[in-house]
Image (tube, rainbow over all chains, first blue to last red; front, side, top):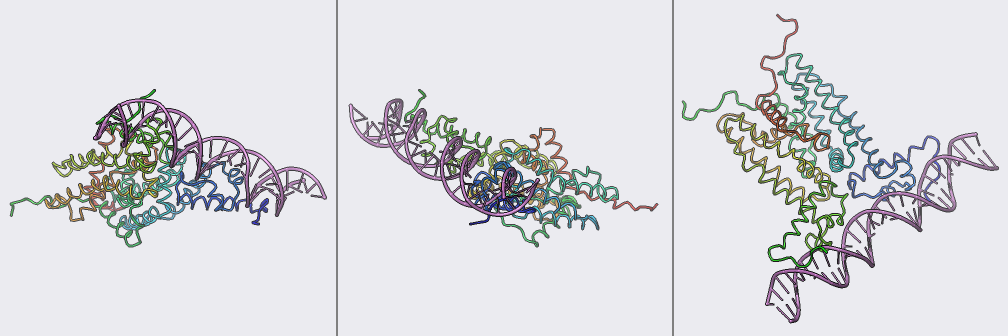
Length: 217
Length: 217
DNA sequence: ATTAAATGGTAATATTTTTTACCATTTAAT
DNA sequence: ATTAAATGGTAAAAAATATTACCATTTAAT
């Protein structure tokens, strides 16, 4: 028979973590509505009783899973990217890291599930946004504010600049990723995309020369 | 007793339409996984039998709903926007129309549901994308190609230009809309957003003057 | 007129899922 | 040693849901 009974001192959180890991994996594979608690409990080798006493039910478990992976997001993106060097190179470096983060299959999938269930879990959606995307946005906003002080950028609200740069980075590709229509991009694609977007963002796409006059010579 | 029996000639599609309308409304309110067929049938004053004979089940009904509203998308956006006038004004006009379309509550919600269920309905996600976002993208792509011929824009792949412009338009706001964290923007906000985005897209944000030299005079 | 098609209403059936309960086991606490 | 806490396993009870079947009714088709 598989081990059971009260856990040893210091091991109280083992089954809790195992449960969260398993639930995370299964939610990714099945979404929220299509996954039964029994499946989770069986896979995690945990009794229904433990599941209910620890999380209170399916909604509580889902919340705990989302909160935990929101926390992971924080550390992974904003903090360690220094945004140093020339403005263009700093932005490209940031873009590379950002794209790498938001295109990871797990990140895409968990976002998709949360979007689908956001009406049922409004608080979770708020927490997720504040922990993840909003912190990234604020981080980049500060960068633009600094660079404006140094005269590198035009005088547009740095919040708008950060918003627009991040949105341009997401691009059509992330929309297709979200719908499951494209594979995860590799390093090469990400690099090209980061440079292309950054360049266009900095210089715009209006021709310097003005329109070609037909019939002129 | 409520009317029943075989429908009159020419009225065969009435109950089918009523069913689709009701299902659409209820899917919007409850999502896919949280809505029972019985609820739909009762609200639409339709028997379970009709539901099954017409759509085969829940998945078939959902598919029919999504397909129908994908079709509505097509006519609403791409076709009637002529993209004429000066490049900037043409883009602003397009932006206005595009933002109006993608921020409508129903559009946001149905997208959210489809994203959440895209893993379970990969074909539906494909159809939806091809009917909606992809056609818009191609439409705008042609515009940029024409304008490049006239020398108004720099020589960047028009597909990239269209992609970047649409992505910039979506902006952080649409992400928050998708998560249910913001109300639908009004005309004034949309107008401001369309102009801001278009201007930044055309001119970029790099300062013409170059960085301010500290200590120089 | 008769037959067949399609329907609404009801309900029966089967399946799935949630939730609660019980028992033996293991360890903590005292 | 004894008691309490927390667990795994099983399953029972309860609820929700999907699916199918049947009946009376209305109209089409012939």
